[in-house]
Image 1 (cartoon, rainbow, N blue to C red):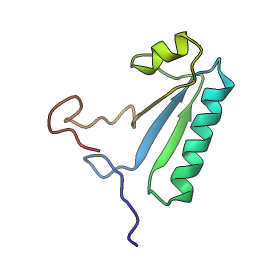
Image 2: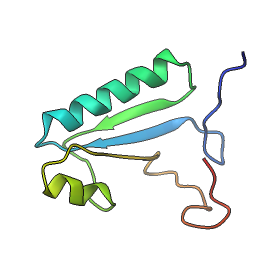
Image 3: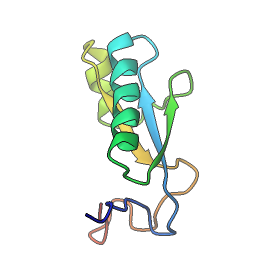
Length: 90
């Protein structure tokens, strides 16, 4: 079976996982997700962010109610021009 290729528009496999620095369960989820990406050979290079995690997305409100959540995004410094557009794809 051919491995799934998950990359952004410029063929860069970098991905950010933002975890809640105040919630160990969120951090554990981030670590487990990174391990799964490796185990399934998804060709994604995750970078886990804890102390520099951003709060500017839907996950923030889960964090406010102590619900473990993550923000997954393309490399923060390399967004697709299709972000939040109808042409945006996985």
